[in-house]
Length: 407
Image (cartoon, rainbow, N blue to C red; front, top):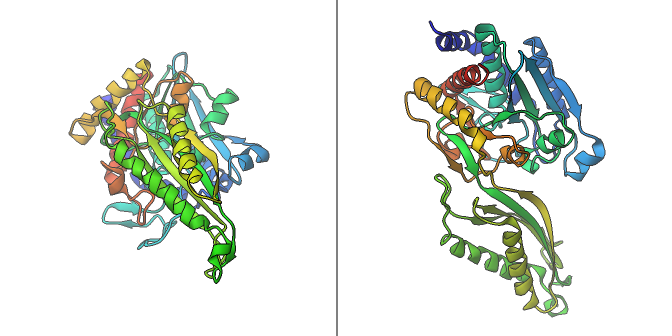
């Protein structure tokens, strides 16, 4: 057997252990919000230690964590130095949205049925804690590299924009690799992605008794008209198309609405949060200015209504750097061998932490264990799941890729 085949054999021989590792990661909740994620980092560090991988624990100061809207964050860095050469970083995030309703499996159980593992973060992206850790173990057991370094980076704030995860670590120069790969899916290597702008809009009127509604100003009616104006933008967005394969057009979603005090009270305040996905060709400042203008212009036509707009998240689009080609070439080559099909390089409408590394001048791509589409993974829906064969094969692709990158 050649080195690649020996890597595959090692991963097959240790796959039951790899699945058990993922199950243990799923069983420690990391719902974000509220974002009390330090306990998961402690558990992960213990599990890594048992495998001979020592993790540095980088706890973010409480004030910074709270300012980001979270409760606790400890970032983990595992450094494996083999000799002179490039440093390749593998990054996965452990934070997840809360489970929501409709599960037929325990969202924190790591149940296995019909070759799939179920649980929140099974596919996005605790699975790639497992992919990356076992790829490094296979690399060291089989290839015994003598050049370069590999770093595992496990963070916990991707859902909130990465500011106290990768951005914080880059700012403090705790990590600064030459190349990086972040958690993704198995059937494509992602080289570009959408940006995301999230705004919190507060609509204020004047609270009143429902028996005398004319004595108040209905904030919900005002919010309804503003929402109608915002949703009308989606019609315009469909006329704007991206030149990046895998990305279509911009779009806007309102994901949360709350307000009012009781059924028999004219609501004096209504708040909502919107998510605006930006294609790589768009200018984030112009996008935000347009949304603020739509909101303000609509509110100006509503007597007694005032509006406050607060930006809660701005994630730039991923613009590929020229230096990412060795990553793309290696993943495509080994992906074709392991999966038996072409692995295209394209864009995705999601946003990821990779953009933070590229903004720092570090070429990166998105690749890991997962199905062909987000829909298939049930990410952010009930019964999130991962086909274990995708986990096995993605681990082989990453291990083989590391051999190529570290030669």
